[in-house]
Length: 248
Image 1 (cartoon, rainbow, N blue to C red):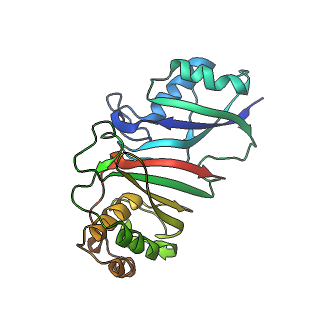
Image 2 (cartoon, one colour):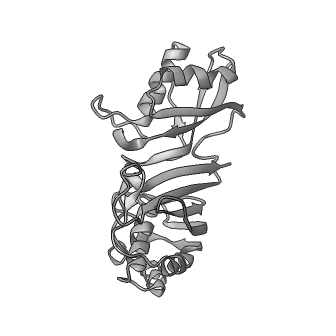
């Protein structure tokens, strides 16, 4: 009898070409490594479904995948078994059996991404793989003020990179929060019901322009209404982004 298994996965995306299969053995992905590990412990191939396709270099603390299996391994054994064969930069945090109609992507209600900025006087060598060094002085109050224009349901066409074929660019953001951590780190946390291609990274790149005084907080709403990618700021680097949580 087949079971539907849900895994919560964390990974350092530095050395991977994103989550999704690339179709090439010389371009390792998170999906390919997970499927190899599942095949190893179940002795049969499985195709997993991820909640989203994080780009090359993007990290995760709460990525969710699901797959069906007829393997008899007890659910509580999936975590230690998979972690024993996965590379050290991919960790399965939780495994649970879910309803047959659960799908990691299509059942998701909202996602939370966190972007890390290093705002110290010089780059922090210990966070260089996970935080983007934002050189220069940042006005965090203005940055946070500009971020509030993005909360709510809007057409986010200005914040979508080319190459996507989605049916609609309308999404709802529940919050865009700016916070401070120790060691000179600032976080921009974005929670929404869905995200366009590179949307969070373009949001961050635009807000950095506000924080550096190159744009005003009111310009964010103008950019949103323009529905034109050319009006927004640059795309922030991938390594500062982390998929924090997926809610169902």
